[in-house]
Amino acid sequence: MTTASAKPSVAVCALAVRSADDKTRLIPAGTFHAPRGAMAGSGPWHLDAQGAEALIGLAASRSTDIVIDYEHQTLLAERNGLPAPAAGWVDPRSLEWRDDGLYGAVSWTAAAKAAIEGDAYRYLSPVFPYDPDSGAVLDLLHVALTNTPAIDDGAISALAAARMTTHPQEDDSVNREQLIALLGLAAEATDEQIQTAIEDLQATAKAHAKLREEMALKEEEDTGEAVAALKAKAQAKPAEPDPAKFVPKAVYDEAVAALSQAKVGQDQEMERLIDEGLKDGRIAGKATADWLKRQGLAACKAHLKDAPSLAALKGGTQTAGKSPEADKPKEGELSAAELAVCKSMGLTAEQYRQANPADDK
Figure 1 (tube, helix red, strand yellow):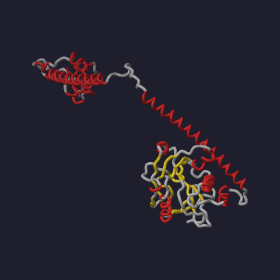
Figure 2 (figure 1 turned 180 degrees about the vertical axis):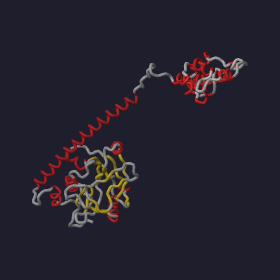
Figure 3 (figure 1 turned 120 degrees about the vertical axis):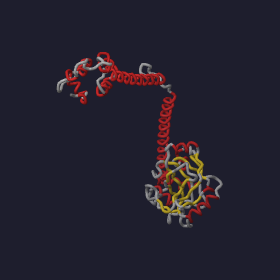
Figure 4 (figure 1 turned 90 degrees about the vertical axis):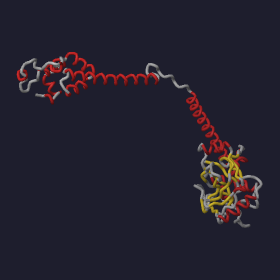
């Protein structure tokens, strides 16, 4: 806590922001430091349950909400002349202590919510006074959306301290020695040197604000162009299919059905012809029938057209009244019926034997 001889200093730090939470963490619990920066305003700072209780009581007495701005522009507005629009508001009566820090209910503006959800901003940077001896956090002045929470944190701290001298909260203020230290000046710095340092900070802050504004405009332009391209692509009429390359699905399905039926008809006709050929002797046996099936319907028809029927299957005898031994082929030779099959199919005796090993003599 502050004492009469120890005026509070002012500091900033950084936290990740999540807009979807019911409450947002504003100050971390325990001992913490700035991500980087000079010793002045870089920590360590400390906030525990007891300190948070005092801070929450102080905040509850306020009549206005705690502002969340962009890039600490609330501190810089008087210096750079630029507006300081709000990104959101913290209800001071909603502050509560949790195990990992101080939380509060935030009401985001539509623009800030879109920026957070679009990953244009990632961090919160609270500004708070603290006891220079113990580092205890004493209050929450305001908060900023930023992507560079620790850049020039000494400058932000100095501006916040200077602002507290003209806009004091309760009895807190910053003394001359602390302001000189925050500005990085020698202890014996004159008022003119202090003013010059502050003006230099103003110029730097204004340049940074201008650069951020230009970057934001460029990002907005790029986003607009990307959105316009996506809309144009989504609204574009699909190209008509080339009739020379594609047919309607109904036509395709009809053709597939017709081919399937034709295949079934061919299979049935093949079975009929094979059956007839086996019965009248134009097909010598099963091996020949299986071989003809593999050759296809046209080959089977050609064979049956030219192959003679065997006499024995027409009611006569295969030997035409002669002794069976008279027409019996010699060892290794084909019978007359087999030679007839070879002739009708244009096969040599050797090819026939290979196709009909079971009938090989």
